[in-house]
Image: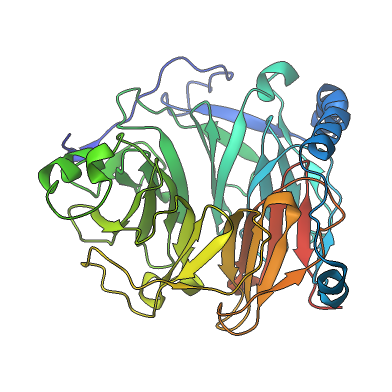
Length: 404
């Protein structure tokens, strides 16, 4: 499937939001943020779900059973932050040292104005509570007061005034794949990807989008089916775990977890690569947020592999090295570099591990060991005093405070 290279308008269908006044652009819908009223109704809607989710998490997972000696020697570098809801958290982003947003399941949406020490629930006043909780907000991206939020079922929201008002950006049902990520790049500008490997850029607040890749990933794989990439012939047409480095390069994993792909700005097509192991890929990302500093890969069974610096992105195979990390078999869901030496990995049963040698050796951190659930995301914001956050199930938000 070819992507159009020219600018095009992505037009959506009917919206559940109140329509804009005639003076506003006809393609979008204006949303007003609600504070105290939204908190009250959200508390009412999610009150019973909080207790049920906590009980289910205890029954399903319990607490990871680390040896007593390991737990005694473990560090404690993270502190839980109270939230006004107890739903699974998916993403967090800041546009200043003090102002940021947190998004999650069941319409969870919270704002901070004190650097994340406290959070207030936010709701859209022209959505009733029953409708709002049907959305799962998965991605948030902010830059200089302008922000984008992506949700499922497909929903794209945009603000130009630091979240005071929002508009819904309609997306065409003919879009190749489902929207999978959105990144704020500056005034009126953003970059969006889809589960079929499309990469689009808008420079007018989502009115028009320009394709950056010439064809879908399945079309690329059909064209290079004899390239030697294992599993490419079984590709189902979608990718997962798409991530973007600081300079615009992308990394994605096939939905079966049997190979991965890379793309850099200026390339016409995605480049497929072998995973180099019989284990299924769980997640992947960049070393220090830069594709040229290396890639990391987590596998089934709690394995973590890291590639050397400056990998050959044209090669089918990468020389991944296995890190020394004893997860007890619990899967690792995310990895993040705080700096060149300090690396954090999080995973199932709220396990946390830290490396002080650039990812070669990891030790256990017991910050969340007594809390039931799972951690899904760990992020550091270098531009804001290297603030660190870990996100998980049951409304678990951890703030990096350093070793105590």
